[in-house]
Length: 193
Image 1 (cartoon, rainbow, N blue to C red):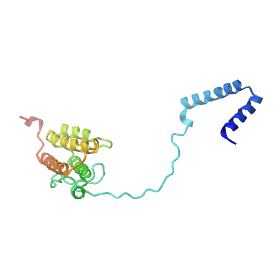
Image 2 (tube, rainbow, N blue to C red; image 1 turned 180 degrees about the vertical axis):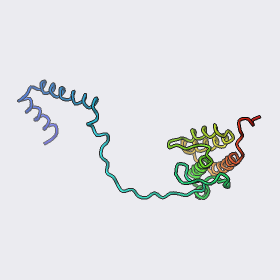
Image 3 (tube, rainbow, N blue to C red; image 1 turned 90 degrees about the vertical axis):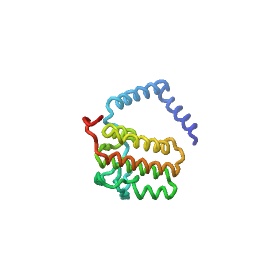
Image 4 (cartoon, helix red, strand yellow; image 1 turned 120 degrees about the vertical axis):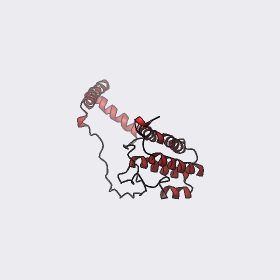
């Protein structure tokens, strides 16, 4: 039996026992309190549907010289050697011609160094722009290299421009410049000229 035929026969059978305008009115009178109850007392409505829980596979973590930016592993001491980017992983990506990913890893290394030196305290969900402004507020000399690195990153990842070896080379230079700015002793407010 087709759906249209079923609907026709069902409404005809209902119409034989109850006038259709009365049936529609009863349906609306029933739906109204249910909708009001749902709106005003949503506690009886489940907050989310039950989910099928699959066993989690262990995640492989990459260990970098500066530690992950968003992770919980220890970072190097502040007097460590300049981490031209994040080291081996960024170099491997650049050697494979994956320049956009290498730029991302080098930026992670730069932000990891800022966190390691306690220039900024990273919170989940912070954007590169927020980290840059927070770091610049605490240590103004780190502003120019961070802003330039954030610009390159944004062009490649958000504007989806093609990445080239020049971008990776520039990120290396900016990472070294940031390291030099962080290695210089921080000035006190009274020492400014």
